[in-house]
Image (cartoon, rainbow, N blue to C red; front, side, top):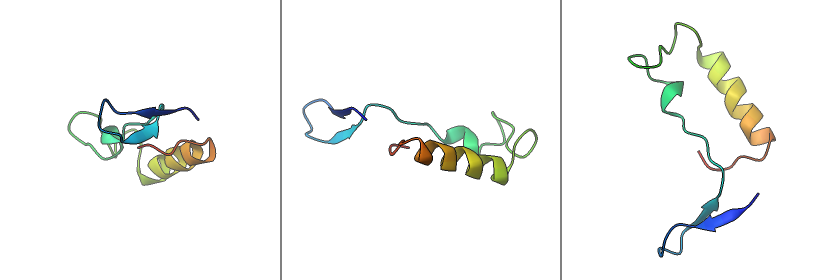
Amino acid sequence: MQIITLGTTGIQVPALGIGTWAWGDTLFWGYGKDFGAADVKAAFEAAVASGVKFF
Protein backbone atom coordinates (compact mmCIF):
# COMPACT_ATOMS: atom_id res chain seq x y z
CA MET A 1 0.00 0.00 0.00
CA GLN A 2 1.33 3.41 -0.96
CA ILE A 3 2.00 5.74 2.00
CA ILE A 4 1.63 9.53 1.66
CA THR A 5 2.48 12.46 3.91
CA LEU A 6 -0.33 14.86 4.81
CA GLY A 7 0.87 18.27 3.66
CA THR A 8 3.76 19.55 5.75
CA THR A 9 2.60 17.87 8.97
CA GLY A 10 4.88 14.86 8.70
CA ILE A 11 1.88 12.59 9.39
CA GLN A 12 1.96 9.55 7.13
CA VAL A 13 -1.14 7.60 6.16
CA PRO A 14 -2.04 5.02 3.52
CA ALA A 15 -3.07 6.58 0.20
CA LEU A 16 -6.35 4.63 0.27
CA GLY A 17 -8.88 4.98 3.05
CA ILE A 18 -12.52 4.10 3.63
CA GLY A 19 -15.08 6.51 5.05
CA THR A 20 -17.36 5.01 7.67
CA TRP A 21 -19.99 7.69 8.19
CA ALA A 22 -22.64 5.67 6.35
CA TRP A 23 -22.01 2.62 8.54
CA GLY A 24 -24.03 4.02 11.41
CA ASP A 25 -26.03 6.91 10.01
CA THR A 26 -29.79 6.44 9.93
CA LEU A 27 -30.86 9.86 8.66
CA PHE A 28 -28.98 10.03 5.35
CA TRP A 29 -27.89 6.46 4.66
CA GLY A 30 -30.73 4.44 6.15
CA TYR A 31 -28.69 2.31 8.53
CA GLY A 32 -30.87 -0.54 9.71
CA LYS A 33 -33.20 -0.42 6.70
CA ASP A 34 -31.11 -1.86 3.85
CA PHE A 35 -28.09 -2.95 5.89
CA GLY A 36 -27.31 -3.67 9.51
CA ALA A 37 -24.53 -4.50 11.94
CA ALA A 38 -23.66 -7.82 10.28
CA ASP A 39 -23.24 -6.10 6.91
CA VAL A 40 -21.03 -3.38 8.41
CA LYS A 41 -18.89 -6.00 10.15
CA ALA A 42 -18.52 -7.95 6.90
CA ALA A 43 -17.50 -4.77 5.02
CA PHE A 44 -14.93 -3.89 7.69
CA GLU A 45 -13.47 -7.40 7.74
CA ALA A 46 -13.26 -7.49 3.93
CA ALA A 47 -11.47 -4.14 3.89
CA VAL A 48 -8.96 -5.22 6.53
CA ALA A 49 -8.38 -8.53 4.72
CA SER A 50 -7.62 -6.52 1.58
CA GLY A 51 -4.99 -4.44 3.37
CA VAL A 52 -6.95 -1.27 4.16
CA LYS A 53 -5.67 0.31 7.38
CA PHE A 54 -7.03 3.87 7.14
CA PHE A 55 -10.67 4.34 8.15
